[in-house]
Structures are given as C-alpha cells and as structure tokens.
Image (cartoon, rainbow, N blue to C red; front, top):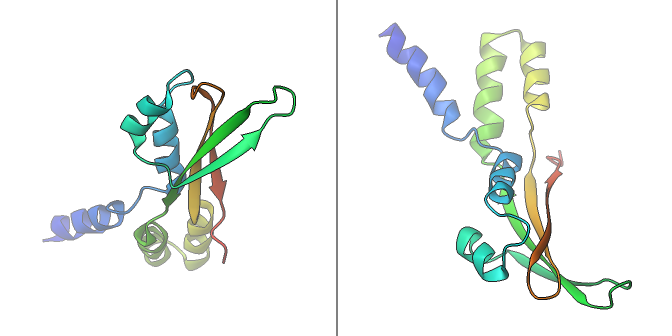
Length: 129
C-alpha cells in the first residue's frame, strides 16, 4: 500500500508537469530555418497570431507567426504542494517559485519574402502574480 501511495504521489503531479516554455521549445525544435509556410503549417498547425513586419533595409514584408502555449495549472500547484508538504515549508515555497512558473510562452517564427522561415525563437513570459 505504501508503494502505491508513493507512486501516486509521483505520477499525479507529473501529469501536468510540462511548462509552456518546454512546449514552445519543442514546437520550435520541430521546424527548421528554410522550411516553407506550408511545411510549418503541416508540422504545427495554424498559428495563434500573424503579424506583418516591414524590414526597411530590404523593403519587403516579413510575416511573424506566433504559437501561444500556456502552462497547465497542475504544473504550478501539484509540484509546489508536494515539495511544500514533504520538505520544509520555506524550501518548498522557493523551489516552487524557481521551477519555471511561467504563465505562457510563445514560439515566434519569422518568414521572409517567398514565405521561407528565416528565424525562430521562444519567448517566455512570467507568471504575473
């Protein structure tokens, strides 16, 4: 019975332990510079936002596709409660604050003229509390 309790204590928190930053990084890793818009769309689906940027030096428009990823609430609650109750309260609190408690992250993809991917990056935003 004790081993089942320990297993549950480890598995339940892990169910949501995938941060927005990790998901955005995985998305960016699935595409490569030089891919077409169609290839990126097949790999990641439709973007959440599209912005048109104009590069003054080239004079041609660039498109930025943004995919938004949110951190599941279980990532913020379960690990912190687990450590908070198992370890000393102050250590659990600071561990929870340091574990990448991000509210959301973006995978930003920049397409140049001709619809070819020329730049990719992950932008991570704070939890906002």
